[in-house]
Length: 192
Ligand SMILES: [Zn+2]
Image (cartoon, rainbow, N blue to C red; front, side, top):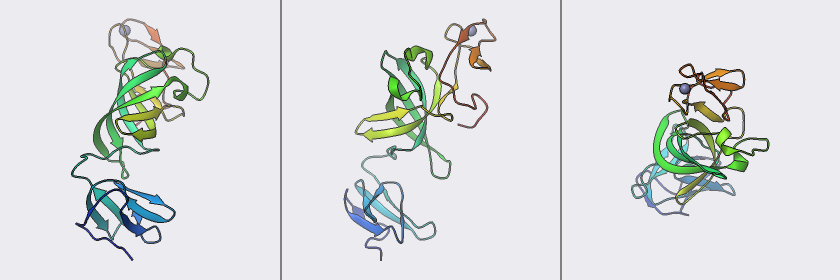
């Protein structure tokens, strides 16, 4: 049984359905086999895909959740963390969802190994693929540890030319500069 129907107005914590019948979509979460609303909004029950979602008119675009994959641009690299402007969230059907938001990658979350110098992992302007560790209020904690996470496009820090991958280093075809990053396995080859 579904207690709510499409168009109902709900608030965070409102019971929506059980996991036996439905899958939590955007704006919904599961706890102990029951699905609840995570935001203030209007319910959408999709009988075909078995998703129950809540579309927020108050909060706007979807909020990234733990495990979501996002695409962002590195804005600033400090000693302990990098600030990232999150440009898109990879949606459930591999759609790109616009979610302008800020995230950070802590130095301990950049790589599976020990990282001493964060400026050898990222530089401002790099486009990265990252995974959401946690999202609370305004701060989204990201990780780039893993083969499919890291820098997907980088430009030369001297002349801004796109860097080309040569084994484990990045080479600038413009000025010959050699740089290092925490790269994805499919640097400049894969999809976003
Ligand atoms: Zn260059």
